[in-house]
Amino acid sequence: MKDRRGGGVLAVGPVARDITVLIDALPGRGDAARVREFCIEAGGKGANPAVAVAALGTRVALLGQIGADEAGAAARRELTALGVDVSPVEVTPDRPTGHIVHLVEPGGRRRYVEAAGATELLSPAADTIAARCADHAYVLLSTAVREDTATTVCRVAHEHGATVIVDGSGDPGTVAAVLEHTHVLRCDATEAAALADRPVTDFGTGLTAARHLRGRGPGTVIVGAGADGDVVVGDEGLELRLPHLPVRSVNPTGGGDALIGALTALLAQGFAVADAAPLASAAAADTVARLGARPRFDRATLEDLAVRPAS
Image (cartoon, rainbow, N blue to C red; front, side):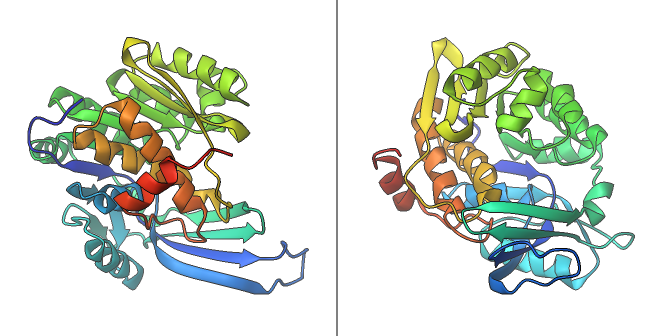
């Protein structure tokens, strides 16, 4: 899947304001909890992978939807400063920019609440997607969008010769609807279990699910294998087991976004899947070791992490 057109990634998915708070424990009904640490930043399952792509030096544009408000304007400014081309981001006066509040307890336990806001209206026309595909050889889709949006993006990108990379974080029905036009699929253990209709708890069950999903269309499938780590199944009999790297998990929220974004960046630079996957795993490890979900790594950090002994 080497990019022979000179490159570029088009990331498609939610753009939101992420509010992450670290607390000792969730308060009971009517009680309060003191916040130990917090961060507020641009995020969302479209924006975070795009930041990961840019962090590794690959050109990336983001197609999402925000409201005509300060939260949306702030997201545009932050993402631009991080190297993401936000010119495709659409602005609507009809809904506010999405907001996500993450409640994180020590040890990485977390809950979150989300107001999708403007993302619910994201529905780019087929000719808009086609025009972007002319300048971007890779399309990275978060399925946390409307099903009609996901299917149109994948179909048009596939028809225009782009490599379609899908993050399976959305509704299982939406993910299933795009598999036939997907080249690379990533999903966590819960998502894979829902798609494959079988439990995913470890390397063995992860590989079984990944093989099943690969048989439904994608050439490469990456599946979270519970506490073991991640597995990769690909062309020519490729099967990898990637154990979790030895970092202290602070907030697991952005690990998958970082992994799929880094993998996409490296594939666009000409890496083989087998060489890109360990670095993408390191991207996830670096991200979950921080409170915020937005990737903050560089190539040197990933290369250092990837050679450490696994836990």
